[in-house]
Image 1 (spheres, rainbow over the protein chains, first blue to last red):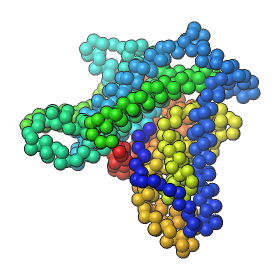
Image 2 (cartoon, rainbow over the protein chains, first blue to last red; image 1 turned 90 degrees about the vertical axis):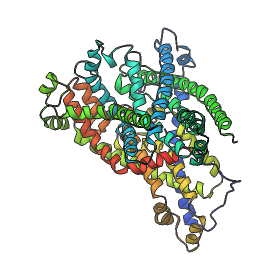
Image 3 (cartoon, each protein chain N blue to C red; image 1 turned 180 degrees about the vertical axis):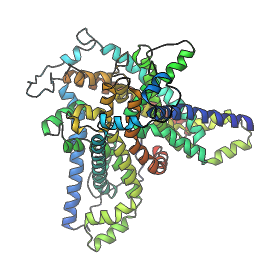
Image 4 (spheres, each protein chain N blue to C red; image 1 turned 30 degrees about the vertical axis):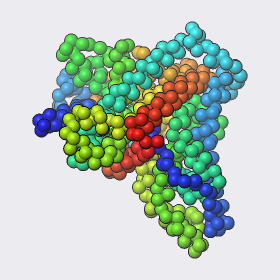
Length: 316
Length: 270
């Protein structure tokens, strides 16, 4: 979820065994390491790889049910009438990722620009925009369900005042934009803090030099701030893209993937654990496709953003 | 010059308030409305009525669920933080061969996809499905990569002479970690613990897939089910939301300074 980058390490780093450690100490060091790495491998690496294996089976998750190797049939059935919903899910995913990435970064940039200061109001603003992350997707989702309740909610009154009536989260055409909105609302705070980190990293002397040259505020923003914010832009765009591709917990709370909001992540979950499906093999195959799709988009995007950083900052 | 700046400030203040404060206030307001008042005039506050809270508390079984949530999230986040330290120290001090590869492997962990389907299969096979201990064990890994990355950065800043001096005097490894490294890395430990805790606390997919007994449900699944079974009893749901989010809001209020500062500082390091 976070995009902390590994610190650049100076020079060659060589292994320096702790000769001063006693035998017992060395034993406890290795014990601690092995437990930690064991947990990471068993519950991080193995599940990631396990998706691929399960995707070639008809695993149902039901106790005692036999599991067969079904070859590529989980993959070849995608997009055919046997598993309707795949193609719409691809479309929904693309729409969701594009809209969330653009909206989340635009909003976060706007907020960061105003909330990066040292004043009390700015500090209070930072707390407020970060609050949805503490509240979590379930509470956030339910709050917005209350707000957009078609009968009693304030949004219904607001839209009703201009003659627009809708079931909102229960209406095709409305559900997707609203889900995108809540996703942005939920995550904009984190992006804002990343942008604030970027803004604060800009050397104030650059602005002073620009002030002497009599540059206008808009020019200053466009020519100095935004280019120098490139590392934060890289982090935030990748964060939003990968997050929008892979997370579906908020969609699960808001619509459970109904009314045109079934992204690939949501589809995989529903195929596996949705009512009366128990098709974990197919769900795993969808997850693998989603993972490959994420890489196909994220890796070139990362290269592009890094190239942009180098060009704008003029460093290696 | 002055006027546009002021206008900009007011505009952003309004945006923050309308976007981030009003929805939360609305939920808070209707939590205090009697159902009958809510039905007739939902948008105006009525005379405060606390009846919803009692009904939500017992109806959604919030006591048990909050206790479950606290147990799960504190235990899992503590374990990820401790294991994070046990992995981070040898990496930061280069005490093992392949410390660099291990660091890269942990960093990659930030981007591993959430593999809930294989995790479910593993939970079934290893006897971790539908029990408290299993649920905790399954939630340790997601917090590990961030803990390791934060702690490596912090430990690297502690002079290595310090450990050599202590070890020469025969201080044990774990004792040294506890007595010297833990106090010096407290900010990083706190951030790793908090992010780990929020991750477990707010998980909704995990409880849906990995638990089936309602007595084991954490509060996220509890209020989500309560929402499903009490469709359109919004004042009750709002009260449940308020109760369920109070602990995490209190924790956030207590730690927001460190959390926000660390996120701002740590997010963009070239």
